[in-house]
Length: 99
Image 1 (tube, rainbow, N blue to C red):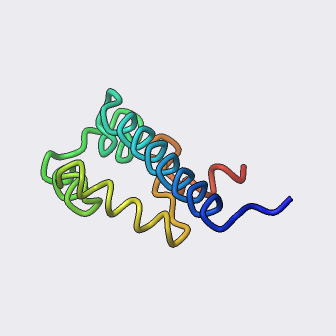
Image 2: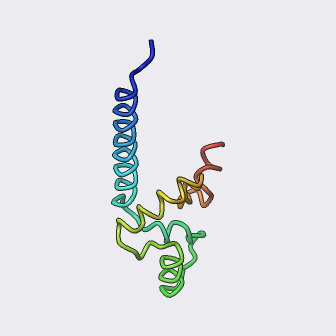
Image 3: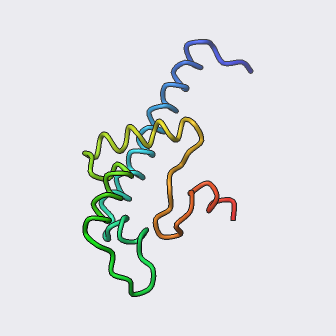
């Protein structure tokens, strides 16, 4: 049974809205999760990382930008196959998922 063109377009639109909602929710949950991702990324044993290094890394990763800018940048990367960096595993998310 073939779907009519309007039905297909409606389902594609629903899928796009659902996908947008899921990515926004997922990104939002990671954004509000406890802990500083930069400190997790730079953490090595008991080493004390200088505040200047933390701020420079935060700027380099774009974590000093507003939520919506971080989300838009993340969506752009996702569209190109870049899922970002796992701060706890200190490796790309795609690589981590393949493990």
